[in-house]
Amino acid sequence: MSDSRYLEILECYADNTLTTSELEELKRFWMTDDTDTLKVSIASAFERRVYSGLSDNSRADEMFNDIMSSAKQTESFVVRKKRVWFAAAAVAAFMISIGGLYLALGYHVSTDNISTLSPAKDILPGSNRAVLTLANGSKVLLNDALKGVVAKEGGVSLVKKGDELSYISDNKSARELNYNTVSTPRGGMYELVLSDGTKVWLNAASSLKYPTTFNGNERKVVLTGEAYFEVAHNKNMPFRVLAKDMSVEVLGTHFNVNDYDEEAFAKTTLIEGSVKIAANNATTILTPGKAAASYQDGRMTVENADVEQELAWKNGYFIFNKAGIVTIMRQLSRWYDVDVSYAGAVPDNVFVGQIRREETLVGALKILELSGMHFRIEGRRVIVL
Image (cartoon, rainbow, N blue to C red; front, side, top):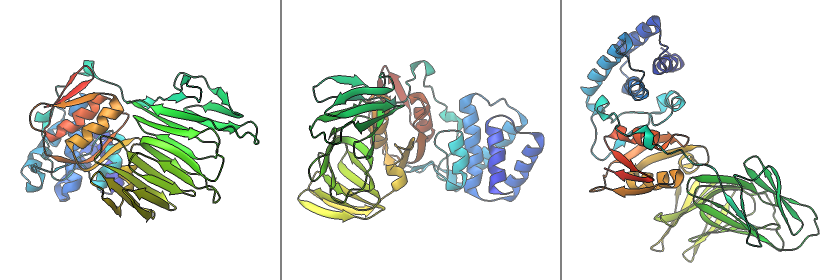
């Protein structure tokens, strides 16, 4: 059976449209193929049906139960105490299509993990929300503002286009220096285009202070939190991002800066071009695919970047690569606007996999509960049990 056919049949099973002939085809594949990574995705499809209420004790479900029973007897499916694997590249396309983390080697599939989280306590994911603070101190809620010109300052029009804020110069001779700030709350993100054409995506709980028009010999902005930049090229006017723990200087390039206060280090990840990083009295030049991290103890390191993971937030995902639960819950806290507390010792499992950011909070937590963890929601607080 080809991979594409295999994924097609699994998708039919997940949404309850599997025919008798397709079931027989899948059964023959199961009996003849010994690839654990592909077989475990069958069990994960069953798990998703249980969560979505589609399981109906049909002939297909009976066969999938048999599959899981044999999987449990395979050593590679036993839970490893400090490593709970969720990802398998061979089945990524299918598992992403049904949403949530997809399972792989190292996870013992069990319907005993069905969540007790109540949909009545669910919380919606974040959305495009931000506040624009003008030079005179007045504020504009960008999610409420109508499309079109939302303000004018120093010969520059501030124009809302869909969920994007753009700066358009009315008079190229205008030299008045006004500073604006766009701030996203927890549970918000936003995109803006600066007057030089630079595009900026702000993650949740972040802010960017910048001039409405760039004058002089540099373009300087101040960042808190996290943002992705696509800087318009200008060899005569370098672009500089000032964050709390590092400074990033470029002529024109694409990069991500993460400098949240609650994270253990600040990080800049370069996608294309080159950037000059200054932190802790040290400087370095990054090349594409590299990331520089500045630690609180004064160290600065450069290493190969996991670009997909670093840009996951911008592309609509959480991606975890051996991440601890504390790291994961910090990200969920910012996106769902919830506080997090721990009942008892903090679990030391690590996770690999991804969750769509469009999942509700309950949906995201149910996916994490596949590892055997449990959560309780009290208002806007998540308690890790």
